[in-house]
Amino acid sequence: MYPIVAVALAVVGSAVAQDTTPLADKRIPYNQIPYMVDTNNGPRGIQTGYNQCNSTTQGQTSLCQTAIVNSIDDFCIWGPQKPNSSIADTEGELVAWCTQPGHGTRVIPPNALTGVQFMQTPDYVQVTGRIDQVLINIADGDSGGEEDPHGADGRGNPLGSLIYSNAFPASGGDKTKLIQVIEWHNFLGGDIFCMKVCDPAGANAAHFCEHIFDRIGCMYNAPAAYQNGTFESCKGDNQDFPGVYTGSDGQVSTYSQPPESLGVISSMPYQPKTPASSQCTTFTSAQLYASAASLFPSSTTPSPTGGSSSGTRSGSGVGSTATGSSGNGTSSNGAGRAALCGGVLVAAAGVLGAVLVV
Image (cartoon, rainbow, N blue to C red; front, top):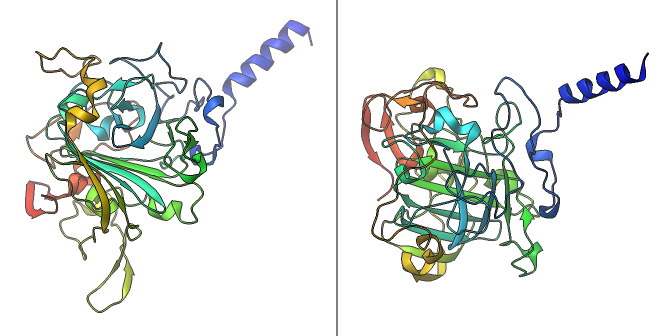
């Protein structure tokens, strides 16, 4: 074989080679992050963003898919690239939106966060709260869904997404020592959010950051206060594993989530137990997010950024049906998938009446 042909075939072969390692099995030190973690091209397409994020990628059109969760004033959540997007249609291509500049990401606009609680427990840290989701490009009224590092194909949602934190003992109090989070979940929609990242050194990280209860939302996966107007950082007890509960008879049971084919989840056999918290420190939004506010003119209200979206959502309330092409989304029916996202129990026609958060 001619050498040039051999080289060409080798290049083609390497270009089509697929990395079969699941995202949750990849171990990537923070200082060794590649440009893109997911180089595959499968049924859900390619990774639409990148993982090497710095000052050159910082801004409201950033496609950074590496998130940071450190503290109440320094955390990221996932959000759409384009305005008026549904989570169900875009879950594979979401990007990092962060409270602080400096991570090479988009910045959550001032006044978007209307209440935040940061909770540090023995096995995980979580940040929960209320958000004007339109300001991070989530369509008004979208009931949302779940992001995690698994997905049916093992490529994660978003594809190739990474999360790091300095909040675990392995960092030794060194704020510059970021540890890769292996197990995490992030629910968004209904103007609330919850991001839980589990200590990779913990024996039960996969249980506390369970990823199989994607249809029952924040209140069942990350029970917390979700109070508007309150910004606090607390120590807390571990929650029960998501889906595990103790009945009135004292018997411990595990909830089995029904398939989407059976329709919207209209009732639950248990109410989640909110863990005890202590040593809470309260703040104002201005104290926490002054760096972010400095990036936006104080006299104007920030607008959704990043272009327009092809996805649409019919209906005006939680539980309406998502339509449109996502490229990387896995669900065509956001109402069925995220019937309890945001902690509000809904039926196909709208709110059923069992409000689980205040």
